[in-house]
Length: 258
Image 1: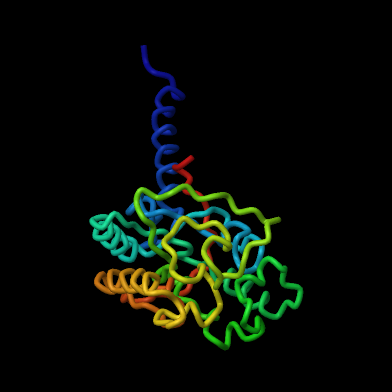
Image 2: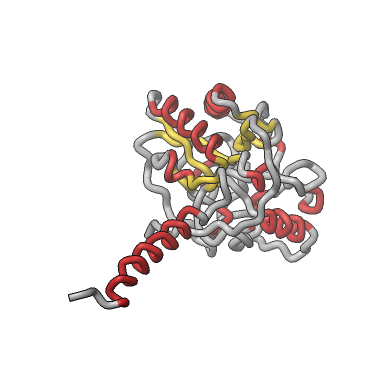
């Protein structure tokens, strides 16, 4: 007995469907970009712009998921940093990686918005908000949008549990003592992340010797693996590679991951 036409076509339709599913997964990111979890799954991620604990006080446009995305060679370099730090019972925690260009535009609009929330003020307690871009804290042409810059810190392993951020709480300023700042399970670097203050300068003399040592360890280890530090922000590093064009795709959860 011969097979029906539908019986012959069905296997091809199934194969075609599988092809499209695999293609959708593969095409989720532009060529050369990867999720850091797929390259260095043990690097902690605390993507601040995907939530409320950031200087704008709201989720930032383009951050639809708390995921770190980078150019592949940058992610692979971070994996090497992580491997070296692990020998000291330390590890990395990333705050921001690839940043959609629309997020930078939102930051620049926020600078000109006089209705900044009181919660956001703790990020710039001693700095004029209207000058954050001219002082070099917020760049209109960020290397983050090219997938070659990363904001990060050190954590002691095994990492301690981190309390949830409470948007109704009155946390202390970013340059204050660690115990009064918003929750963060990282090593104390003298200021919190995204602290728009002179104390955030990598070589600030206003931090303790222990905090200076932590900053130095982070900087020297990152430089060893191809990252350049930014003198104004102890957390910001850019990888030495061809930058490529700025991107504006939305950060989404991988379709093949629950």
